[in-house]
Structure formats: C-alpha cells, structure tokens
Image (cartoon, rainbow, N blue to C red; front, side, top):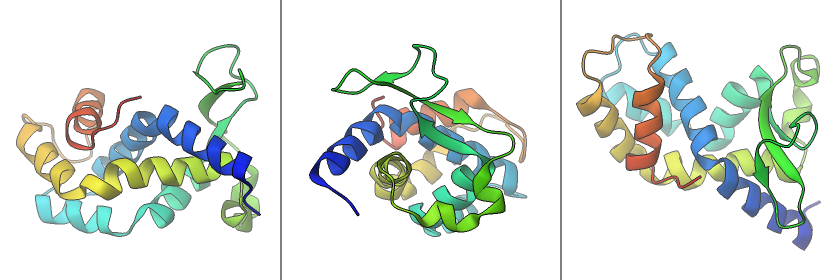
Length: 157
C-alpha cells in the first residue's frame, strides 16, 4: 500500500521522467496510427494514462529503476540515481498482473503521463498535427515527439 514516503518518491520520479515517459508514449501513438489526424490522436490519448502506461510502457518492458543506471539519470532527494530503461524480456509480459501492483516507480510513470499527456491531450494532438512537417504516419520522429512533450504537454524534465 502507498505510504507518505512512497507518494513523495512517486511525485519526484514523475517530475524527473515526465518528458521521457511522454515522448515514449507519443512515439508509440505515432507508430500505431494509420493516419495521425487530430481526431485519431485525441481518441488514442483518451484511452487514459493508466491503460496507456500499462500497455505501451510496462508491457513493453519500460520501467523506472535504480538498477543499471550506472550514474546516469534522475537523482532523487535521497541521492539515488533512477533511469528509464527497457527490458527486452520483461517479467510483466509473463505475469501481466505485475503491472497492476503498487510500486512508486510504476505509479511515477502513470503520474508523469497524467501531468503531461492527460492534462494536455488536445494541445498535444493539435501540436503534432500542426508541426508534423511531412512526417508520414508510422515514421519515427524523435524531434517532433520531444518538442510536443516540451511545448504542448508542458513537461520540464
């Protein structure tokens, strides 16, 4: 169950990984949509952060961890270095119920999504549409998704 210390860590990590979580989710949105119209993007984003983070981050092996960061990443107030890493063979794929267990690091991804994409979905969809500059559907564009997170989703990490 959540504790005051766990909630504080969740909030810290959400702030530290807001842009990275946002961008990874937008990369997935862009790869999945046959044609990224404003309406299609708004529908994709409307599935909500809990479902999106579980399906597109956790089930794809993405996690916030303090293991394997090798000194690079976000430093929490207790001095621990955290990073967002992808495990190519995550345990959560074998045991999907793990994605539903409470953990401050897992909750941080959901909170990061809620603070960025959840709070600014319409702005993000409009920004992506206006700024795509010929980027075709399903063509990866890290600059576009990164700028969408910074400018439209208001992430600061």
